[in-house]
Length: 552
Image (cartoon, rainbow, N blue to C red; front, side, top):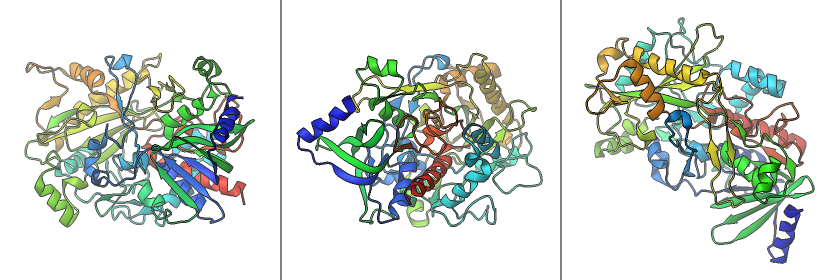
C-alpha cells in the first residue's frame, strides 16, 4: 500500500518521527479550541500544525482592516472556478491562513443560526445535534460582554470568546435600524426580543475593548505555555498516514526542513475547514476512487461524497451614497488611528457588517430563508476596492441555497490549491436565482422606507456606465451578475450523518477509517441561517467532549 511505503521511505531517510497523543491539523477556529481542550490534561501530548504564520500583523487586530488581509500572506489566496450564472466570473474566496484561521480575517459577527437549523441537523445526524443539545456547547464557548444583551439566557457568560456590543456604530447604521422597524424584516431570535419581532439588530462582535478577539486569542494563546502542547506554524500537511485503516500520523513540511513525520498514538483530527480538509483527505487516498486513481493516488477508502455537497452563502447588494452621514471610508485617516489608539473608538472598531436582519422570500415559510446585512461603506470589488466617498452597502444573503458545489484536487502536490466550484445559482428549478432576484429587489424597495430614504443619495453600484440610469429590473440583474460574491461561509464537504453514505459519523469519526476525526465546518449536514464561525466553534467543543470521553 502506497501510504505504508511512505512511512518506510521516511524511515530510510533517517527521519525521526515525533510522538504525540493527538495531532490537530489546522490552527483556525476549530483547531484552536481543540488544542486548548485536549492539552488541558497534561497526560495528553498534543501537536497543532498551522500552514500560516503567527498573527502578529497589526491589521489582524484592527477590526475594520480585515478586507486588507484578503489576498495577503494571511489568506490562502483561493478563487473559485468561473461561475456560469455570475457572468462567468471567478469569485474571490478568502480563507484564513494564520493562527486563528478565518476568525483572524473575518467580520467578527457572532450570529449563531436559529433553532430550526439544528432541528435539520438532528434529522440528519441524530439527537446529539438538536438545538437543545448544541446550546450548552455554544454557552461553553461564549463570554457575553454585551450590555445590550445583558441577562439574555440564550448566551453563555463564562466561556472563552468575547461577545461584545460595537463601540462606535455609524449614525447611518442607526437609521437603517429605525427603518427596519417599519418593514417585514425580522430580528435575530437569539437576541432579546421587543414586543414586535419586526426590525434588525446591531451585530454582536468578537471584540474586547475595540480589538478583534480571534479564536486563537480566546483559546490557543492561553494554552501555548503548556509543556504538553506543541504549536508549529508554517507547517503544511501533505497527507495522513495509515496502517491498514487506522490513522497513525501525518506527513508534513515546515519551512526548509523538508518532509517531517509525526505519529499519533490516539487520534488525528482534521480542522482545516471546508476547503482544505477534503483536499487533505483526497491526497491521503480517501474520496472518489475514480478521481483519485486518475491523479495517481492509491485509494485507501472509497467515499464519493468527500469534497462534494459544498454549500455557501452567496450575497448580492447595492451601494448608495450617504450625503450628510459619515461612513467608514476614511477609517485609515490619521485622526481615526489616533481615536482608536487613545480611546478604542471610531471607524477602526467597525466590523464593517454593522447590522443584520432576517426575512422570508415567501410569507408562507415557517422560518426565514434570507438575510439582509448593512455595511456603512461602499464594499466593492469583493472587498478589495478602496472606498473614497461616504456610502453604504445593503446586501441580501441567500441563507438556504439549493445549489451545491464541490472541492476537488488537481494534483497530489500539497502546495497546489484545491479546485473550488460552489456552482452558485445552478439548481435545476432556478429557485436560488429567483430568491436572490427577489432579495435584491427588496433592498431597492427598502430604500424607500424612512428614515433611510432621506439618508441616502444615488445608487453608485451597480452602475449602468456612461451616466445611464438603470431601471429596477436592470439594477437587480446587474447586482446579481456582476456584484455577487461569497459571504465566506463554505460548509458541508465532509458532511456528518447517520446514513452510510455520509462522510463522518455523529461522533465526527471519518467513516471507513479508525482514529481519524473531522471537526470543522466541513461536517455541517446543512448550512445554517447564520454566520458559520460560531457554529464551527460549537462543533469543536463537542468534538473535544467526544474525544476526551473516548480516552478517559
